[in-house]
Image (cartoon, rainbow, N blue to C red; front, side):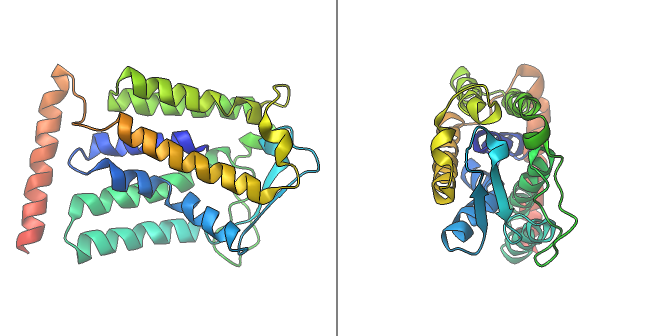
Length: 243
């Protein structure tokens, strides 16, 4: 899944855990991708392209067993939960961050080609529904719908909605070979691909954080639920600190 929709997942988490600042949620949902960028630059993981790149199907995440395996994603989520909740006593933050890390794996399994392994060193099976290869426009529809759904649950403003929609539209040429775009310049330049994705991550995290800042938006009928949620979180955090 592209960067804008991973960032949108932080909106769901912020809605569920309103007392948690959005910054750690944004970092959590992109922790796997940030690891992937770093490991590609270090030459530990590898990305390749076809001689001609017309869509995302011509870009191959050839080797990424450390950043995008099931075991490392779930292991990182559990480790973050243990450190933050058990070690630091931040119960709500620990659970929100753990869910954010794991969410990246779940979303990538929906759209990726068969390039996600169970654990490092395990070559097969390779997981992924393969929408990017088999039905890229369906992947576009799924990602757009998911991003808008996250915005709707969060009850964000028009600026945030426009950003989610435009962020998805910006990826359309990568998901349709019939629509020309800058992807033609990516052929044979895997580190340019990595750099482009790194820039997408930074921009989408920053803009999502800016456009979603402030108190969690509420409707009249939501007040009771949010008040109950905040009360439960406050009691839980005080209990943890007391222990």
